[in-house]
Image 1 (cartoon, rainbow, N blue to C red):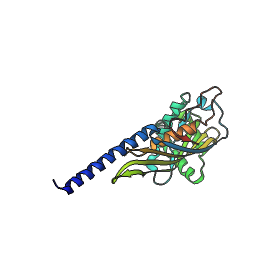
Image 2: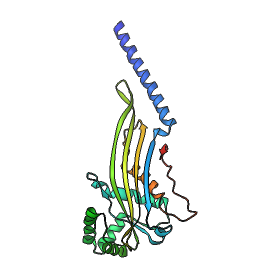
Image 3: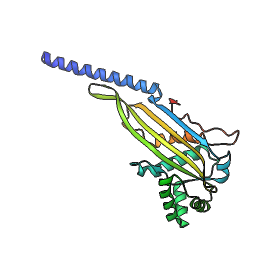
Image 4: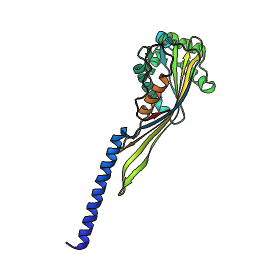
Length: 245
């Protein structure tokens, strides 16, 4: 075996050794810091007429969310995820999911009125009171929940690599979610809040940060601000490590 071959074999072994060391170090770093997850949140809300105990007493029904252009197919997923979190965090609230609401509306023969209500809302930001009352009577809840996905983006950035390989990537997602509760009896907004979230994780995994992940986190934050009876435990919003406000 020639000297050149020995030098090549030695260089290859050296590269492999360095790669293994880097992989072990990066893996230890990820395990030692909660997989490098960072969540930065910013939000605001205002209570207009909703009182503690109202949602438990009169119920809350999810109606079709609205979204920015390009995210129309996410409406069902947004409502599904948010409703599931609400049931977990506030089990005392009688919550009607979007499929349940839509089924009752269609069975009651209000599909056309419901469609027109949304066309009007798109132009005015107002749900017509007479239509809300019809829907409220049909679904047997006083309050309706309307979500608006105002922005969502996801991607990745190479944080660390060696020998042409990506060792650590920063996966990220950003979200802006608006949540509004309407009083159907009065035709008024009872409560509203908006939440902005930046979620990032340093990982060896190829999977992206999903819409469901950030919706769940934003939902917990928004739900934690809903009025509740004195003595009731507030929802836990610390599920993601590295959460900052």
